Image 1 (tube, rainbow, N blue to C red):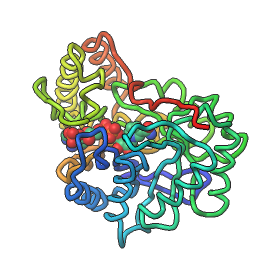
Image 2: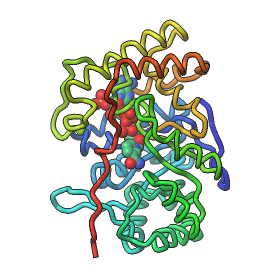
Image 3: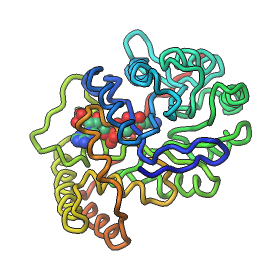
Image 4: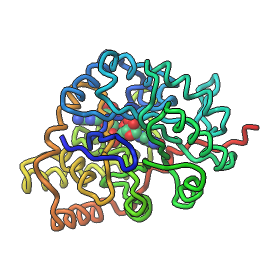
Length: 330
Ligand code: NAP
């Protein structure tokens, strides 16, 4: 495992973080707590010390599973959770980063996670209907009280981060980033380097696409978001899968690895990345971790990866479909 310090904090997490959105079940076809707890334990045994979760993942459920899995091991783990989304009785999620919402959510998260502090507390999505000063000041007072050890934002633009930093310290940033979704390398990652922010990038294997385990006949059940994710619809799904097959050949030929290891390493080797978040939810899925270490991606291989993606995916699409709606809530 590799570790990296978060500037301005005493935190030094593992560079692979276990993401728990799928563990919450919501938008991933339902939860499976037994496998989820086993996956978390397997990750800890593989020296992962960073776990990313959020209240919205299963509307509290992912945090509860993490709390249960970490009982007795809390101090060995850096827990990152989020704030600033809310949901109604129908399970519809909207943004709310008001001071009142933050004050309520911190206590709910601490209870569900069975802890009295959060290591990294992140605004999940920017909320244009709340003044940034209100959101940032609420986060700063949690930081000053010791309830949270680091402040983060997720899915923020550079202007939004500039604005936030006028009112509160900022330690981490969480954008999407993987071989197929690269916008962050043009804006958020250079910004993170310039301002000494630790980037926890999400979706390392592009919602499973870069695992190498999918085929054209893979189907997704229940409320699985991949039923509406534009990457997983024809004709694009077949194009992305062809790129994955060629990336797998490249990983085998150059490094004796598989595409999942290449995808994780590719994120870890990108300038400005602190940790790659990866959403394994079964213990067997976690076993790929060790394969991400012991090699690095040279410039020639990086260029070859770019070529493969450009040739196979003529009409790429990003993760924008995941953005929750903005709503005036007061
Ligand atoms: P991901 O890590 O790219 O993909 C996760 C999915 O890939 C899993 O649910 C699993 O799906 C499949 N998978 C994982 N390991 C596998 C393996 N070894 N073999 C085969 N399939 C495997 O996507 P993600 O979960 O969306 O992103 C990672 C984390 O980032 C999240 O859990 C969350 O913590 C964070 N995140 C944050 C935001 C944000 O707005 N801040 C947004 C998205 C994600 P199946 O079990 O169905 O195959």
